[in-house]
Image 1 (cartoon, rainbow, N blue to C red):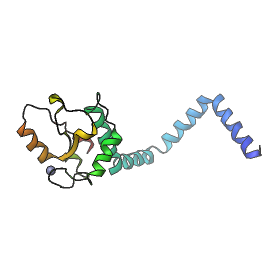
Image 2: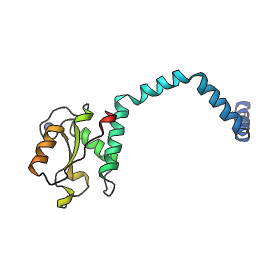
Image 3: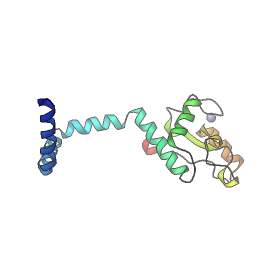
Length: 147
Ligand SMILES: [Zn+2]
């Protein structure tokens, strides 16, 4: 073990034994750099990737609590569709207000919450499909707050 490693272990131990000091130090840092940190957090959370990932995670959670689908699967599905509406082909992956995960066969008709039974549609196609089967809950809509 060299000196650098020994020092690292010592520092780690010190931090473990002086948790309150460490927390106070972190708080001082946060207070001092408050605006900068806020700005960085804002930048991060407004990036497209983060928004898309949040949308997908929420979609998976909202729609597939009982199913076998994962957010990775529906994310890959969107990539597989080239980020396009599966019906009319318009770009939807950057239109988070206009992107809807749809069941080919509604769950109320026995459709499964499985990757082979879902597709991404744009809002228009989704509405059209909904109008043809108005009693079915075909889709859910993504929360606009996040888009
Ligand atoms: Zn469409």
